[in-house]
Length: 233
Image (cartoon, rainbow, N blue to C red; front, side, top):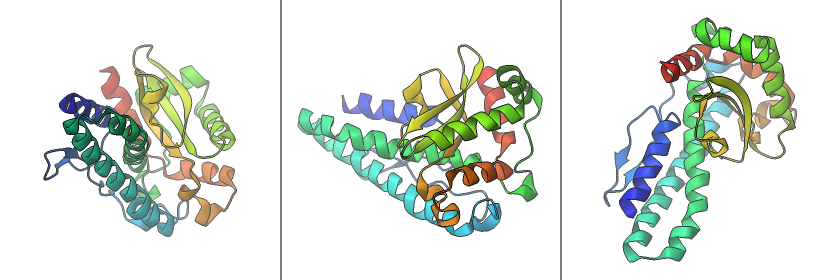
């Protein structure tokens, strides 16, 4: 049971994008995760996102999800070994929340790119055509994601998703740190925008729509396009 449980978590991790760095094995033999490095400096996304926000977001918030996820996996392994069903059930919430936080943020960092390196350039090629077909225009997609992200109560994420079975794009939202797979096993995240306050409050205060309007200036559409084409290849 322990191996099946941990294998399923590992499969979920990779299915949703994973980290930029490899998984690590702890001293107990449990497969854990590591905080991925960023491919740009903390201040490289300014003025859209401040360097202070990026540093805290990556070094504090994401790092905490990694630490707590790994801790929960260790505890799960021990509980399964003891046959403690109550502890196994109790740990599921921590695994989902912290594992989801790790998966979501690992995708989020890849979805961002400095303007000087092409961040904010509209999607081209197959993804650009699919956006026009499924939403009418790129501008219509941005408007829809901004509206749904601003309307999301509390904390969560707004996603551009690809249904790999229907081969259609859709805009989805998830609460808290729920990963996109919780909305459907066939949904693949192409773009995820974090609308937790820790992603914007130091710079935009409580004006989430301003954050949503500005983040498009540093979106890495090349990465989203590559994921789209790889899934449908």
